[in-house]
Length: 196
Image 1 (cartoon, one colour):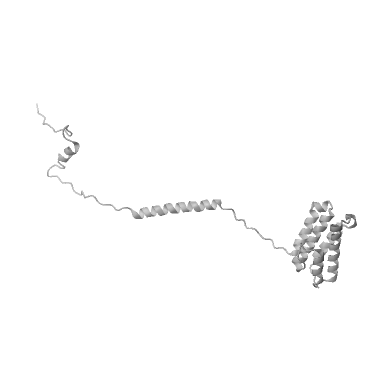
Image 2 (cartoon, rainbow, N blue to C red):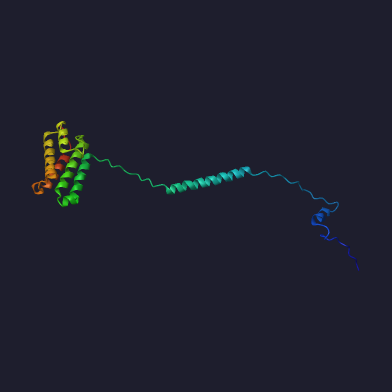
């Protein structure tokens, strides 16, 4: 029978674990371990940290720009129609002809609209009068001081006086035909050149 060698327990009740580990031999005698180096200090990866921070800021900035773009109102390009005064006057005449005022033969409103169209056209096309807010007397005075042809002056005067009779004196609409007034205005506008 062989006798067992008494072994020391790794942990004894009297000794603590660090004391046991410290007392144990690291290597058996005569043996070496190669390529074991001391601890190396590794520098903090500053460039990687700066790059990651820059990348995070860039991502948040792009998200903010995209969010602002989503919330921004849509800019619509508005085309500005540039029409000649003659075309604008003819379109206004056509709108009057298609309106309920014309359909119901409301002569006061028809005459007011005809006078406004004529005054606006004379101001925009020939720089005569003050436009829509001018009175008949003001427009006729402006025509007196300009080089307007005599027959054009007579047609404008007749049209404005007929409209003023209906607007201000309450003359019966049966005395004046709106078609005649409208055709007179249309002819004045289509005539083109009023000056001599």
